[in-house]
Picture 1 (cartoon, rainbow over the protein chains, first blue to last red):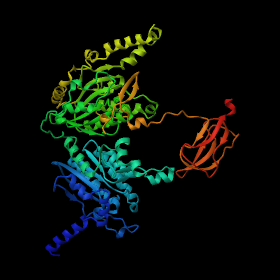
Picture 2: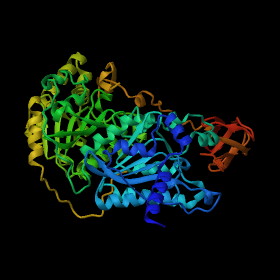
Picture 3: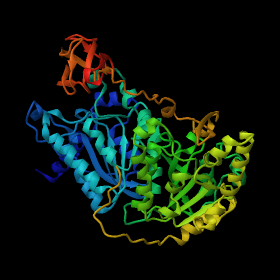
Picture 4: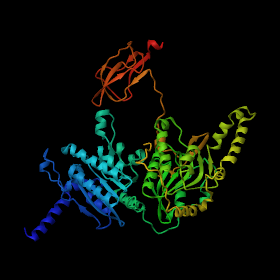
Length: 513
Length: 113
């Protein structure tokens, strides 16, 4: 074969393997879905994508598979850059055998995962697959298992992002679940272990795919998804933005950006209502102190009583954790403890300092909470904060009552700096509850119980509903005026940039999950 | 709509203080707790009644089979939680039942009297 013919052959082979099947492509487009290859180019920097394993073929000779040639075996893998950051990426191609996962398909994914781990670069997976390739039997299950194994090995070593852009059902959902961030798109993403058909057959319960495991459900009810978008384009912008906040791997820090002052016009001195039972949006506090008032919230729709997300201070990434008085009074409960604990562990694994804003009345009381295991889930938060060795800075804005005070990165869990606003109330519980318990007998016996009770509430408020008892004991390092918050945080972060904390050697801890 | 944009009219009570806030959908939709009623047997899973073993008036011992409920391709032996007398049987063999459907009612067994 002449050299010229070899070159021409290659061009033909390449075109055959990459050109989408017109009918399948049209079907995909009709659902508002891009082609797998288009998705990769939409996420990566222009012309940065380099594809590997394009000519991989399956080795299945059963059930007519011997006659089927599947371009790339239904998955595209390669490397590229996002805003200059290197990433490894794979995208399942629904137009090739429904994106079904056989052994060759899985091996392409595990190969790019191995690369990502060795090279120390983030991994992005785009999931759009009907599930296991049934014709390949147990080999397809083996493929899933090998992916899960690597997701686990990569955890805490490289950031892993999963974008769900189609069905992701059965065992397939466990790969995204093992990764750090899951992105979903309205009407396109579907995640479940058993689908509506099976549920109907076995249990007789009818539900649509959307209501069972659609994007909204995963973002709002289950907490499986971290970012929710209305369209694929919006989703890709979220992916790109997130990549700027996180480092390539656990040996590095996230990139430093130029310092922009806060753009917020919120007056911090007046943001907190005078009465401690009135709400405000704690995200206004975060935006008022961070660079450019730019805050990327994670899991915004789920367990909104706690706010977590990324921002920058002096150009460096910071993980923000804050109780949200505007939702469920900012209480800790099963879901909010879970959400914050996972975020804290991500930040700790990837050298991102933590800033915590505290304003909570305590844990949510309720039979449902107790029976749902609020003890076990709440313990995750204590564990995550105590375990974290990145710089930990806490600002007590208002209420810090009881177990909630301890849990929200108190000095006792290893906070490096604890600041409190003058309106902080650090106590075992709110004045009303405390007075009712301490003076129960006296209130009942008083000539005017209500007047007596009021007086005792006032007494308790004056004595304990302040930051000064905690400050007198050194549990709070400084009581600061709200407008000094950014300055105190910037300084604390700057001086703790080289913080080192050594812990006893162990294989790993045993967190309560 | 973000939580802050919603009118903060709802309240949540903690330690004798009513906090103004918004409630999450999950919180608002939570089911009230219902204590277990030991005099009623309900289906733990939807399925098919294969054979009711116990009949009204039967005295059954704790752990004895009451009926067989087929679900998920498994024949589940539903047994008595205590020594009881069967007061009523609400299902017949071949009947499909939904989750939570009432299957039997009991009265305390002779030992408890």
